[in-house]
Image (tube, rainbow, N blue to C red):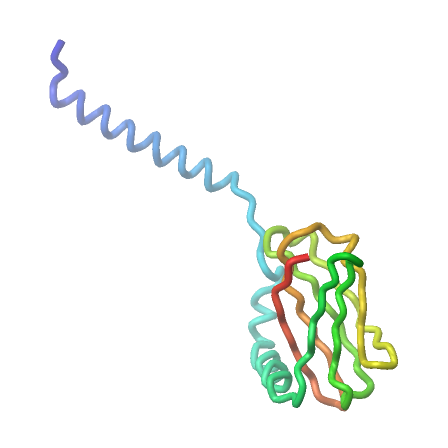
Length: 146
């Protein structure tokens, strides 16, 4: 049995339409997470953010991060010359925004902040530290695997 060229065109066109409908269905059922819910408002604060990053880069000693897997603790060491440090740590999970956590900075006598990584699922996290010291604002970001 030989199929005429007219039916071949109809079959090709129908196959194309079905492929497009499948792709639209698949794309609409895909779950995605935005980095920020209010990305427009965050963009307006971009210049302030860039100044905080520059301030952190100009520090005499950088913030050091130490992860102790055996004790499941993350230690952040701030420079000794910084006094009155106040701020927040944002643990951002790129794969799932529902796991994001915000922690207040609580410094000990040696300008160190230690927190437990036990309640957080293992995997890649982005640690974002936003703090002020001496009237100056700073921002530091580092990717870490807990």
